[in-house]
Length: 291
Image (cartoon, rainbow, N blue to C red; front, side, top):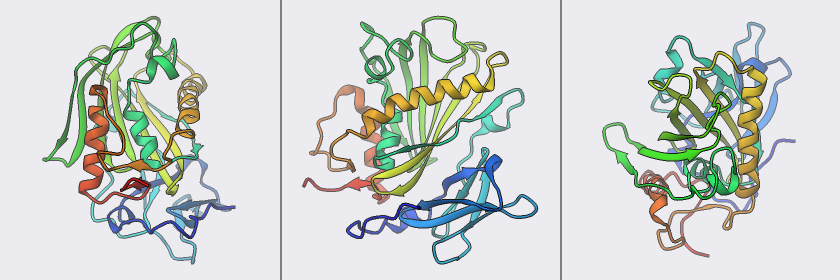
C-alpha cells in the first residue's frame, strides 16, 4: 500500500512541490507500475507499450516526467528549472551503477545531511570508510555558491581503510560535496584506479512523507575490474549501516533553528545546508521551532 502523510502534517511549501524527485529506475519500468508516494500523495510509476515512463498522481492526473541518470523523475507541481547537471554522467569510460532503493524511516532532509557528514565514518563505517584512531575531521571549506545556488564543501580529507570496492588498502581520501537540490547530493571522491579523476556517488532521495523516504544511490565510476554485483553490494552495505543511525535520530525531522542543536567544527557542511534550506523555504521534512 502506498504511504500517505498523516493528516496532522503541514503541506509542503510550494518551493519543494515544484522540484524534481526520483521515483523509480528506468530499468524496472513495466505496465503494472510501481505504486509509491511523493510527499504524501500516492503515485504510480509505469511504462507504456514503447517503454516510455508514465507517472500518475492519486487522482489519476498525469505528472511531469523526465529520465536522467538511469532514474525516472517526477514532480507534484510545475518545475521551473531542469534537473541538475552531473557532467561526469556524459564522460566516456565510466561505469554507471544503479544501486537500487533503500527505505528509511527518517526525514528526507535528514538522509541528505547524514550523507554530508564525514565525522561518523570511523564509528558507523568502521574499518571501511574510517577507523580509530583516525577520527579527527581536518579543516575544510563549506559555502553556498551564489552563482549556481548550491551548497559545496571542498578540501575535505579523511583517512579510509577501504575507500571503495576497488581500493586495495588504506588511503587518505579527498572529498567534495555538492547539494544541487533539497533532497539530492553529489559526492566527488578520490578514484583509486585513476588518481587524476573523481569517483561520483550520488544520493537521490524520494520524500514519501515528512518522516519517511526512499533513497536511490547512483554511481559513476572508473572501475573496470569489480563486478556490478559487488559494486552494488558494497554501496548497499554502507547505506544500510547509515539507516540504523538515521532511524534513531531525535527529533525525526531536521531542525532548522540554529539553537536547536549544537554544531561542531566538523559540521560546516550541515550548517550551510540548513541555512540554504531555510533561505529557500525547503521545509518539507524540517522542524522549524523547538517543541
